[in-house]
Length: 516
Ligand code: FRU
Image (tube, rainbow, N blue to C red; front, side, top):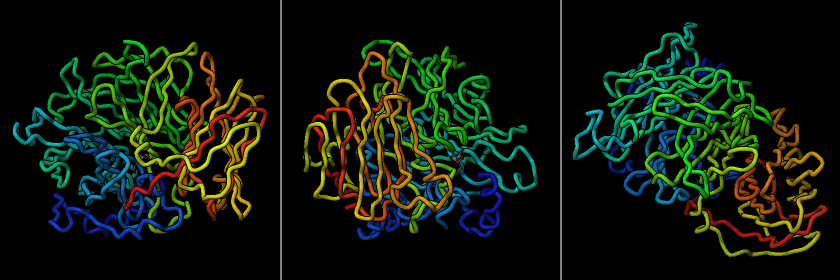
């Protein structure tokens, strides 16, 4: 990232929009419309969120309010590579079909607008709105390029902005930054939540190799409460994009706290990935007895993911950036770059190895999933007769889990393979010959693995969601997950199912395009 930050400073100073304090939108702009053909370029995901054009990375400011899901995102509107960061904006009624909105936050003299979160300040604790019209408040990191260039360490600070019209227009708080920096080089990505028990706002923030927790009663004045993680979890790279929230253990009354931490590099299959900790949070301090490192997704392309604020207590919905800093800038798209994962429901479970998270596409995707067009059963099977690049494939395995391999192939001889290796007790995704892979040295170099977590549960149900340039592989409703980008030069037209297992209920269903 670092070299890119520096490289783009020139563009930053040329960018006239950077000076804007307040976003103003005319009526015609209030709803950004794009012709339907815009979203049919090759590799354009048909049922995953993408920006209309240009570069996107992390999801930001995830907030559910008044029946609307808000998705803000790291956005550079001038190019398809990372540049001076803005917050792009989209809204949805169901998390699947999105309406693109005007850019929400522009860089200003305090810096570029890096990742962060949003809350509805219902009681107007910040005083930035009124009781009758409470503010939506965005909390984000300012990244001051000039400071970084000058070799200083204090160039990342935390700022806030507010909207009084449901996120359409934003005003920066004139007392920014609300948290300054006394010399921490990587100090970013505030995720704020309302903590009911202490009646305070709690912010999780990362500082290089650990997380810091702050509290506030007004979103403006923040007090450092504690730190976590110098000695916990994976440390192959910088900690980024924290998220702290409570979750009930499925099938019990027990509540635990979950802390998500993205890390780059240092993920199990290289580059960027998201680890998590299960423990306790008392309003000030996060503690855990967890010894091993746990990963949310073993695929290479699920990063910087966080969860929605404002949902009912028993709903925890996550979305991640479907890319990896190792090759994010090199992927073969031209109009836009990068997509989000499918939004996924997070649930917490316990087995004899401890707590673990499942993540699985939200139910709303069912409304876009057609009746199966193909189905089969048995030892070895082949599905043909249609394109499989906008599909969901489900299947089960009868009896014990043994070696199996599912191969998607096309007329160009390209193959995407996924399955299970019993000897290694690993699931795998092999995209080494899946299509275009040579745009970057690491992209197609290796087969990627995910350890089985089977204990009392047998792992025998599988779902594969394949879109124009991605595959999401879910084992047992998301107990093991692998999310990967793929760039086949032609649609896959055949799927073969092989191995030492008997397949049950193989179905292939089309998923409807969300952009019409
Ligand atoms: C994660 C990240 C964040 C940062 C943002 C900058 O992908 O590096 O830590 O805020 O991207 O775009």
